[in-house]
Length: 206
Length: 206
Image: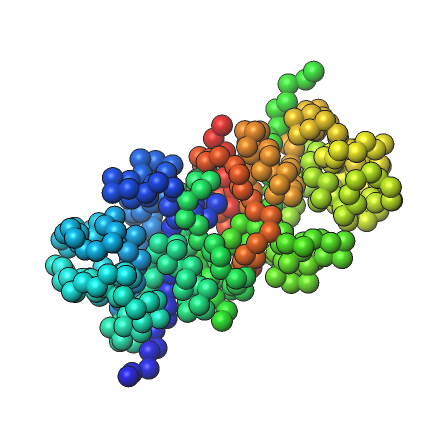
C-alpha cells in the first residue's frame, strides 16, 4: 500500500441557503425544484452561461486523479442495475479519470471514452476513498457530491478542503450541505467573486 | 406620509452553514454554541480581530438612517420589561440613529448617548418598518437580526438588499438564515474576500 499524499477535496455548487439540489428529483429534473427547470441550470448558470470568467474553477475540477460521487448524483436508477445507465455525462464524460460511485448494488466497472471509468463501490465511503486514493496515485481525490455523500465524508473527518460555489438564489428546501455534520473549524484559503457566483475555498481543520 | 426612497437592507454575519447564532443562548452567551465562548467572537472575529481590512463593511453598517432588530438580539430579558436592560451595546451604542426593537411588551422609548434611541414596537414587522422608514427620512433602513427577524421580513418580501458576512466555521445547529423563507431570486451585486470572512451583497428580486 502506497502512502497517499494528495488532498481529499469536496467541490460543489450550493444555493445561498446551502442546498445542492431541490426537492422532487426525477430523471427529467435531476436537481429537482432548483429555481429553474430542474436541470440545475439555476444553480450551475455560472458554469454553463459564464464559463470564461470561471475558467480557473472549472479547470481545477479536472485536476483530480480520481473522483467519488453518490449514486443519486450518478443517475436516477434505484435498486438493482436492471437498466442501462452510464451517468448523466454522455459517452465521453468530463472526468477523464476513475470515478468511484457509492452504491448498495454491485456492478462491473464501466469504461467510457476519454479515460473515465466508473467503478461501483458497495462497501462504504472509507473503502471508496481508499480505492480512489490508490487510483489517484499521489494526486488529489475530489468528492463531487451530492451533498448527502459529502456530508458523510465531512462527518467522518475525511475531507481536507472544501471548494464551494455559492449561486445567487435560495431553494428553501432540498438536500443541504453540512446537514447533520458536527461543527467544523474552517480556514478560508481563497474567495473570489464572478458575476453570478462566489467561489470560496476552505481548509477543514481535522 | 412621505414616500420612502431608501432601501431596506439586511446586514448579518452567518456561519458557512447559514447560522447566525448557535443553540442555548443565554445572557452570558448571547450567541449560544457559536464555535467559541458564546460571545459571537467566532462568528464576528472578522469585525473584532481584523477591523482594518473590513473597514468598508463595518462603516457601511452605520450609514443607515434607522435600524430594526428582534428582541432576542436586543437582550436576554423575556416577557415583561421587569428588569432594566438597555441592550448589549453600552451607554453609547454604535447605531447613532433610531433603533426599532420588535417586542410583545410595550415600553417607553429609551434614549441613549450618541444619537441612538431604542423604540419598542408591539404591533409587528410591517409597523416597525413603517416607523423606521419614516424615521430614516430618505435614508436606508437596516434590519440587523437576528435571523428569525430577518426571515420574517424576507418571507414578507420587504427586503431589497442582503449583505452577508460569511464566517469560516460551521455551527451545525441554531438560528438559521433563510429558514422557512420561500425560494428567492437574488442578483449578486458584490463579493469580496478578507482573510477571515467573505462579504456578499445580493439584490432581492421582489
